[in-house]
Amino acid sequence: MLKSTLLEAATAAGAIMRESFNGAFKISNKTGINNLVTEIDHASEKAIIGIIKKNYPDHFILSEEVGEIVMDSDYKWIIDPIDGTVNYANGIPLCCVSIAVEYQGKMILGAVFNPFFNELFVAEKGKGATLNDKPVQVSAKQDMASSCLVTGFPYSLLDEPNGPLEVFNTLIRRGIPVRRLGSAAIDLCWVAAGRFDGFYEHKLEAWDSAAGFLMVEEAGGKVTDFSGNYYSPYQPQILATNGKIHDELLDCINGRK
Image (tube, rainbow, N blue to C red; front, side, top):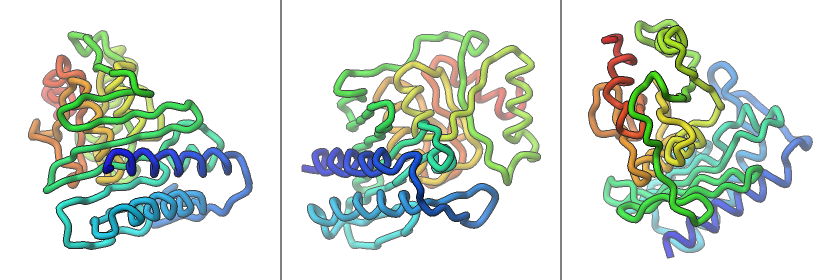
């Protein structure tokens, strides 16, 4: 029932995204630079929450736009109604809906749906990760020099020591390709699928990564913070890799190499 509700919510939100793509809709800016929200974000979120509440009216919900809907429950739904809103607002189809389910503080289910590529990633704790019902696995690359990486650039941290630009500069000067797609949830899923070998970002919110980090773990990868500790989506830093390049990339991010 949990999984079917998750999939119903993800596909319903994806349909809303697809129907309104490249159409006329209202766009506003939240606090900060290029921190956009559209009326489609709100419509997607409303559909997701409606489906969850229909089946689980007593579950806790954390969603990007409405914040917390606090309930006394062991279950928490963590929702990003459109991850990659800037892409969506500009007609770039690198965006998705991301929904995760947490039980007693542990992530147990995640779904990330890009309706434009028709790619539905699903992860279930202890049961692996799939793309359109087919199992996915992280890549087998053994070293960072041969890897293809992906990242994002939080505008508020650009000039920090070992910040986004400094780490990016170090990597590209070594000839390592580093991409920026504009959707952390897609980045994580593409690590899970072996398209990228690693993803790092200096500042994310729980709804950006809750589903995607479970995807990487269930596909055989490794996810930590920048200190190498077990990852929690309630802290900002994330490093997700195939596991084989993890320590090498961690040293690079922390300025040790």
